Image 1: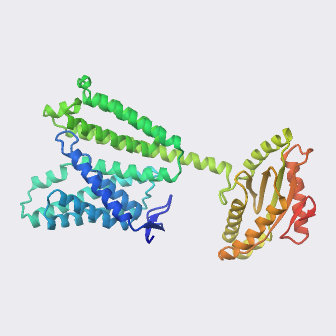
Image 2: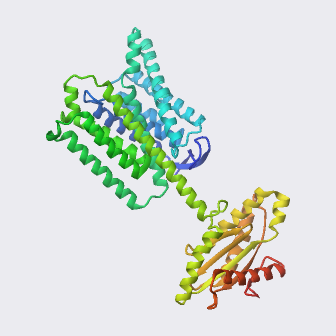
Length: 483
């Protein structure tokens, strides 16, 4: 199948730092259909009058998320989807074309600004979330309204009065902004959660939590017995539930829960039930209520972003506690912890343990001649070779400097594994000219019944490694015998 070269941001990097990704040719078509479908859903929700009636503009958030994710490929999809929506509403072809162009221009301006500010689509920090909020509320919406005023004056020859300007900038500003932010946040954070390969239990728990929230909202908003509740009572209960979801699922959960809240309030307005509809029917001014709801939504998502950053930091600290920061292998301390467990197991039951103690030959010369960056590349490259050649059950670690260790359990052909690693190194190095060529020496020791500590095994493997070095390097020695 033919493919297009599309630019997508790298994980954990600003939008400007992009890598080439390949998408099928039909991807833009699917995006355009998705944009059109989101628009139809938005128009259905917005057909009710009254509280929060204009707050569900799903297609704008969908288009923004797609442009942040896939870059310029989404431009045509957003344009085509918005053009189809305008024509579907009965707008004249020329005006529909102009409106679609204006909508695309606003989104391009917003994404370019976010890229300039080093926005990361994964939104793994509160800064990224706040950039999205400020970009939509202070850039996207004002520019869109300025374009609308320009069209009114140039195409419809309308008189633009001060009252008209005030009304245009007031009408639906917060409602449209908050929905665009929510939809974009849920899509972007959801894609990132999916790429982080969350287990099935995560998605099942999220589904149950979302269903429970929807059930509670249905009781509060649609069941006649609950119509005596004041909207503030409902908002207090809903805010607590949304915060609980945010505590469990961070930004993705908070954004998804708030979308459920907005959808439920719209549904209640359609049905003419619940405290919100009563407030609408009484003719009360709903501006303050809308503002209050917007504050709840944005603040709960900010809490979700803060929790996401905290969990990422905790995961990073846990990673650094157990892994070497350069190679990603186990570090010395964690290797000893795991190796001691394996040694205790081997002493309780018949279990073969084999330790491979490795050292990069003439590594100091690489650093002195080519620089420490070249040395780091060599270490990282060799770590990759070890990971590819060893089993997932093997303990692979960088013990410090240019020393590495592999502990295998079960029946293992030590000579075959050692040669497998050395052959892979010889084959792969010429394919990576940026890595300085090097060789490796190995000392191998097998577990003996007299070994009481891991250090006993390491001591014999280290003696074998010393012999490999003394015998000319680039070789393997097993407990004093050449392999």
